[in-house]
Amino acid sequence: MVNYFELMNVPQHYQIDIAKLQQTLRQLQSKFHPDNNLADNNLDASVAEQDLSLSANTDAFLRESIAKLSALKPEQASAIINEAYNTLKNPDSRASHLLALKGISQSINQPIRDLDFLDDAMSFRIDLDDADGQSITLLSKKLTEWLNNYQLAFDEVYQKIDNSDAAEANDDALTKQAIDIIQKLQFLVKLQADVAKTTDELAKQNFDNDDDLYV
Image (tube, rainbow, N blue to C red; front, top):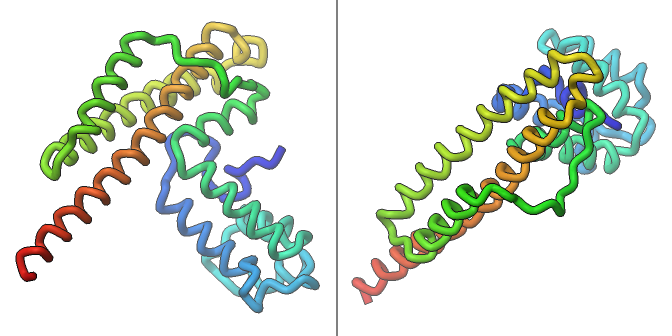
């Protein structure tokens, strides 16, 4: 499988520099976007290396990524770049990718069994349905803290897996703990999208109400 950390030139850790990831995305897109004349079907690895050598800001790892991508059609390279970026940008898919690189598979259909978590999630959903312009800000802050806590929890478990030998890394207890956290991260990331949608809807309502004052 493709190692997206290597492709995007970021360290293979859970906590990553998102700004660095975005910088790499821009650099790669400038070379391989289908609409970019610089990304030509006939561009081979040697040409890419020569072109990149002109840039003092392009390091060896990124040069290697571009050399590999240059063997693909621009559309294919662009699709892989976007998939890699989106995978690493999101906390749940980044965690899943780290486990996959360790040979640890997970079932996305397995339900969350933590009843306390489910109770909290249900209460949050109810509050979200009843949210107004003021309470949505508090809910967003609460969700951010919730997400941060589970990201820290996964990072701690992953470091144990990463620092273990192959046998220990596949230890059932550690693996189950990591997968359990990922399932919760997946839930919270979806919830975050719902919060963003509700925030936009409330903002639109307020804007429409303000317009009514001038009718």
